Length: 240
Image 1 (tube, rainbow, N blue to C red):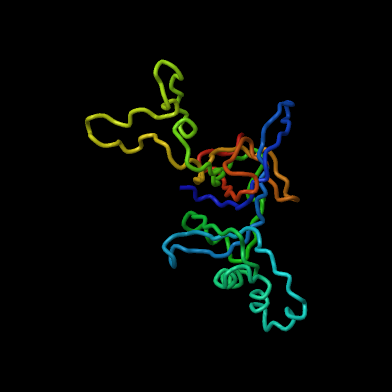
Image 2: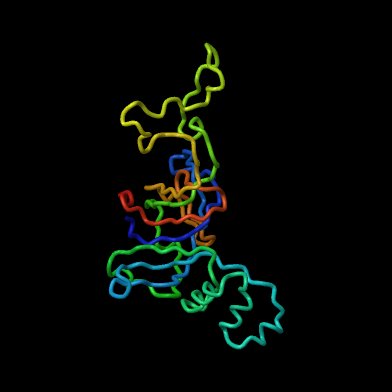
């Protein structure tokens, strides 16, 4: 389990840059942070160490200034402006840092004692990453609906001649006389995509702190505009 700190972000798309040798490097641009620490969990109180971070404010409603001024207190103004969110979400964000509710909330497990480095309301940014380091990126892959075995598992087509009729895209036999049931894990047609996928050991090609953008070498799961989580790699360290 990855217990390194990280950020939430949004996949912007793929592009390419040139390295020091002039070679073209395919990279994925990720808008990472800034993220707000919404909650800190400790080993003594909650049984494990973790932080809850939020990314991207819920858009405020177009409320006349007169009504905002009449609201009694900061919490009442928050409820008036951010009525698109639920009251629990508004209250949770207000209690954490008097901030607007967030579109995306995730909990990151930490090592015991590491939670002391964070506090509610703290802003996290790209300063935790470094160029040349490695990160793990988790996202939700594109959903492709119900798919057959050829698209889902890469099965080959049957011959289109010699008696084959309406079976060219079928998967063939799914078992035998023993054990007289379909084995677990048998590759068959079914839901394809729309799953959480983590790509590990992606190199940080460049950091753009002014735009809150990080460029990682290679591809990451999900469509452009999809939410992702980027954390320091658990299996690899920066090159010497």
